[in-house]
Amino acid sequence: MSATKSTPWTAADLPSLTGRTFIVTGATSGLGAVTARELARAGAHVVLAVRDPARGERLAATLTGSTEVRPLDLADLSSVRAFAGAWDRPLDVLVNNAGVMAIPESRTVDGFEMQFGTNHLGPFALTNLLLPHITDRIVTVASNAHRRAGVDIDFDDINSEHAYSPWRAYQQSKLANLLFTRELQRRLAAAGSPVTAHAVHPGYAATNLQGRSAGAAQRLILAVTNRLMAQSDAMGALPTLYAATQPLPGDSYTGPDGRGELRGHPGPARRSPQAQDDLRASRLWDLSEQLTQVRFTAPTPGHGRPS
Image (cartoon, rainbow, N blue to C red; front, side):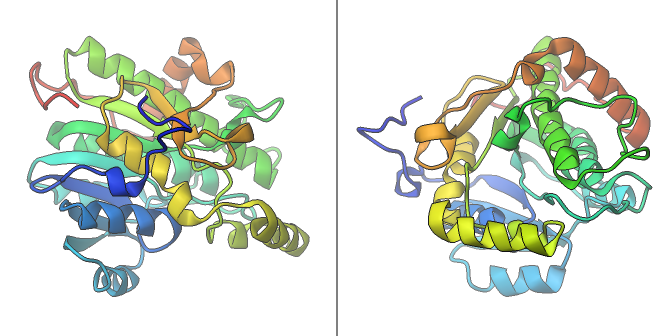
């Protein structure tokens, strides 16, 4: 990567994106809003894919550049299908940014545990349904929380029906993001497609995700640590912007380059051994196809353009 501590990469280094189209999910606040703002500023046409279109329109009105707002609820597969079904033009980059973190136990419209459904199954279905239109890359926002000791995919209780822990469910969903990226890249390469898949994480960035965490005590602790330790959402969005626009190999993983990958400018990020396991990635993919009834369709060789 070109991002180093001596020459840190920033949003000011974005190339001209005129003529390119990006979808950013969860673009009404936090990392998604910053990502949409900077991509539009660089000349891209940015589609804000959001649960609340009115809120999306208010944000779009503040952005400089070409934008549009389309409704998308990743916790409802019918909404995902409707969004993808209405897409009828080439798409350069899909940014799977939307997500929830450590929330009280709840279920998606389709009955999946909310964090696994929103953070993994929704983006899995959206990506595969849009894949025939994608010409460049897919970027999925994961988390360094996937590296916590003992985090794995619980294939025997994938929907936390027997036991629920807000943080464990979140960590599992973020590990799923990395396994999804790994298997997607393998399938794209096997199909001879130049379309590539990438994962990123923001480090410890102050966003509204922490305010939705389960438990008042946890929210208080997170509010304090946000003030003392977190970097801004503008800094937290840099890995996403970097991976969405810079030359990178497929299955790259980008995060902050500072100590513990908590803060800093874009650089290579570390994955847990579980996140690099091809058998886990393949098994999760097969299960995700079964749960969503959405399958990978190999792009026509030559489809897309080099990153």
